[in-house]
Length: 294
Image (cartoon, rainbow, N blue to C red; front, side, top):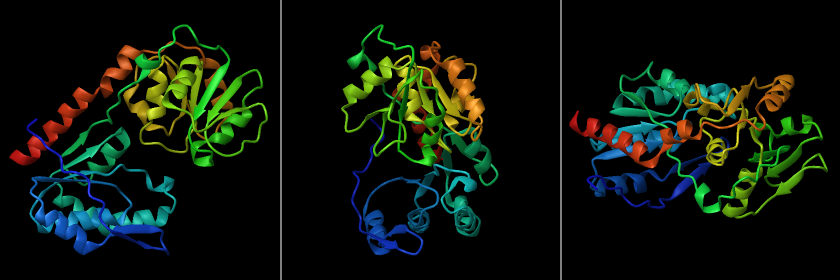
């Protein structure tokens, strides 16, 4: 109760078509931050122009800055060259204005420790709705579930390599290349929870994900997960049962991981407490207090 957050305000933005990036109308952002009483500006984002704007204005107003980059390695960005140029030519020099940087993976923690002394690794919080829709003893031994966008970045092409002995369900939009797939769209949270509950395995074959709520939803329903080695929530799953990773790009490794993992038990009591709301809030409060008292 000793920390309060300002309401979100929909400030005007403009877009640079040639690079496909948006930015705030500078005068509007400056006016809003100047007239507002606050101690800390918490800036989120990485390869976006509004991050630079926010850093500069907060520094000019002599406000404390906490920065959450939500970092993706440059090679996984849509435009890797421009991402590198943007960071090393601009954003890197603004990091010195931050009082603290909050990361979520081992990968981005190691990266930002090269440029800043005060880096704190804090995962996102997660609250499961499992108890509301709990349907015990409903696991279907051959059912595999995919939840995500219908594109290559989410690795949907891996599903086409799965044997027809599996009943494969997808919560996605758009057409798929196999007629035996069962596609769900526009479903309620209760229907999604029921799918998690029935599945014997959830697959997350993404090209890169800094975090994965799909993995946590699966674990909360006692469902094991196969994920690519680029799904970074695995940083929090060491020595836990109920998941396996495969090398992205290796179809054989993916298929072996599926065979090995489907139907496994899940260390729910070991995995889920790491992401409890009370614990995550306490971690952020600790960062904010360190920044204020610096």
